Length: 211
Ligand code: GTP
Ligand code: MG
Image (cartoon, rainbow, N blue to C red; front, side, top):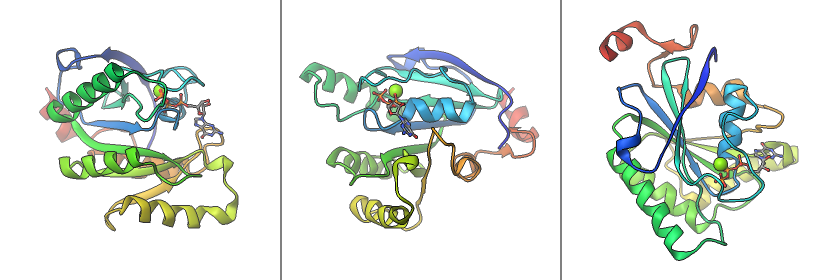
């Protein structure tokens, strides 16, 4: 998957603020601090396209980016951050429900989990929610650079077991820092979206449908 162009589009609190048009869309979800904004920067090769922070819970809106004028990338708010008020949790639920419930563009949800740890109860809930929505998904274990080589296979199996992953769903570990597994991760993330891997753009037929 060739990345030729990337732009930040908008931050949305509600569906009326989402970008229009019917380009395919990939959304990144996962616990606060798991590395959603970092992976978007790492994919686009831009250091600060999406805001990265050491303070969990920084991304509270639905942030839209566009890649190669062909596909939207979405940075969803993180969950599971301990120091949030009840009203913030409610707000998170509302934002996610509206996004997942109304956005027809979504072609794939990418659930990020920390490659070092057991998925949390919230991660399990998120995975089950994705399955209930019947949206194709990919699981990415983040921060691969922090794992020892002999932990990779073991932790992938552990995450598969804990999430009770559908055997048909794929999991890959990635590091936004070292970019290890970048090509494989990109192929898996963009597979099935109608993107021409040579040009990195939507295939001709899909582009003409877009007009
Ligand atoms: P919220 O916006 O709070 O939901 O968090 P987020 O999921 O967007 O996480 P973010 O990308 O802001 O990253 C959180 C922290 O993890 C930052 O300090 C990043 O530098 C760090 N981080 C992200 N990806 C990696 C990685 O692949 N390796 C390492 N070592 N650190 C990473
Ligand atoms: Mg973020």
